[in-house]
Length: 336
Image 1 (tube, rainbow, N blue to C red):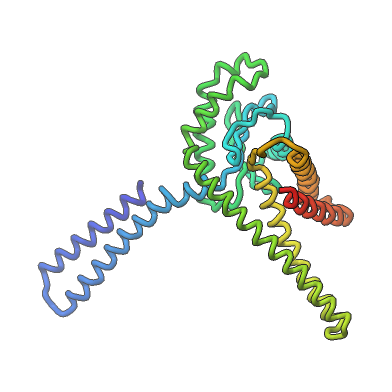
Image 2: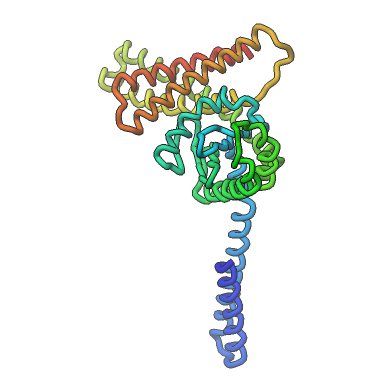
């Protein structure tokens, strides 16, 4: 509000100066002064419009589109009370299993280290603490402004939830189901769920296209390696050049493969109901479960790297795990 008031005052002052000079003097420089004054006034006005648009539309839309999960924990007991999945657009009915169980380790680590933010294999964890509750949002690719927008919504959620349920927590016996309906109402009051749903659908379509593009890039890099291997065998390039080019291509391959795996992992969480339950659909679910297990192993290795205790054997193991994930994705695509 102070910034907006300052801009308005500046515009008014400029206009007053213009009127005074217009009455006091008439010379050749007046046209130039008028032009400059109008240009400055227009620029300030345009700046206000752009700033308002960015704050009121662009930042909220980008932030909403990046939301993946919200998880609410009870601070005294460490119990997860409630979770919402923005990919499935529903509450988690079984808190202790699946994805929530996989990320619980990171929630505990954040609590131990009193961390407000953590980058993981499962996305960026943004956390806000209340008196009784802590709420964590899993997201990806946020700017500082978008992260701040998310944090404000998490803080609003905590304020309302703790105020509404302070009596419930006094004699709480561990039944998390009593908060489900209320927490869903509260999150819907601080975040536009309907807009989030539309944005997530668009995001999923974009990720599908991105997945196919990344897959094509990986195939292209494989072909490049085959080509330089043939060139080396036929004596067209030296061993030194072969190794240099192969290393460069493999580095690019590793980078793209990581994007590819993360994209496929996010898409694997999207609900796609099979037309009928058969051997193929059961096989798909089995592969997704294995996919999640391997991602957990990779995430644990990432934590070891952050703590500075990762070994060369761990690094080699991570490469093997990523290769397994790539193979699983190929199997999954063949079953669809």
